[in-house]
Length: 348
Image (cartoon, rainbow, N blue to C red):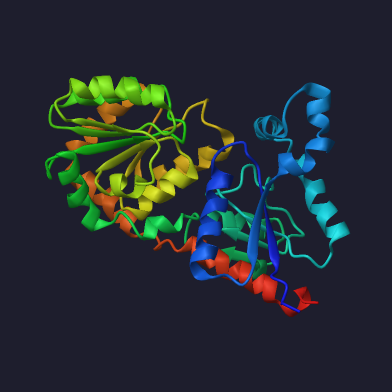
């Protein structure tokens, strides 16, 4: 009889792209490394949809409810998920891979009673220990989980190559705009303002799966003399980042981690519209000197101009990014999951 391949269930919440991106990264890494187990990805909505009392009572989906919980800090509602698994499958390990730089609020995703938590920052590790998770059950990864393609593309070689491909001069300040998989309305006026701010600047606008936004940016590009390059959904994000001097983005952990892996400073906004679980990310950027934090997107062109005029400041930011640990988090997570699956207590 053939050996049964262990299955690891990856539960995600589709309230944003972060969980799905991390799951895709783990799936790709497992295939690349020939992991002795297989992942199965499921959303909590699909598994618990028939029991979704929130939708029945209010019409809100599970994902909408998740965002409401974050805003109101009703984090106690997630505890039963942990308890149910422990009660029904006491021998099955329960791991939490934190896809943000820190938990928000403390004890949203990190709870006592977990088999293990996998975190990408010292702050998140301290949060886990502070609520009583034994240190030996806290695994400090070298960063946020990145898709394996970020180790195969981008890098110093890509900077000159991609700039030649785009027709950008090697010395031109190049800014990349990236606001999620669906783009953002702010990209259009922001690209126009950046082009107006300095005739030497170049802009790469990643519009995601948003053909309308690509069309609007293409119209601007037609009048910009080759200084603007709009692109739709692409798997070349690492290459375009490597060709850039700055990444302007929302403070999602995935985009920030990708930029830091490419050695690129970031510009993010922090205001009352910043979603709760990403506010710490902006402090992470600010306190470690990894880029610029502004209050509104309209302040970004002026901030970029100040950055361009300050070579010493640029050097400090680049040095701070270079001092971050080399990110191998997706492979580290894969090894930790494999060790849990292979543990003697999990067999038979």
